[in-house]
Amino acid sequence: MLPPGLGFNAISDKARAAAKTNKCLAPIGTGRKCLKPNANGFFPYTPATNLLYGLREAIAMLLEEGLDAVFARHQRLAAAARTAVQHWGLEVMCLEPSEYSPVLTAVLMPPGHDADQFRKVVLDNYNMSLGSGLSKLAGKVFPHRPISASATS
Image (cartoon, one colour):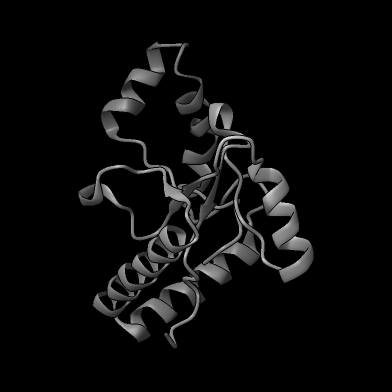
């Protein structure tokens, strides 16, 4: 329900102790810069304030709809997406139905068809943005994510 750019990190006391003597733990060492200011509620860099406001609103929306209803909606939309994919004669990348994701369905394009070209046609003609396959799946799949920000479904 947010654009990319917000992440959460936690550093245990054990990890902090290890970082004091181990110079290889760069991410934890970098985190050391945050520990002292953070003890007083400060962050030593420019925070992504707009994402924090967005997070607060997203959490409020989730709580308003209720988590059980959110999870059920995701299951329902994902099942509808998989049904549509099958009716189109395409394949879902996941072969094991018990492992289907309620938040992401990767659709396999038939041999000789480029998923990135398909994504472009969909964007240009229907103003709908689909995800792209990465690494060895580039051009072969497009991920479909159900609309998750709407509490009205």
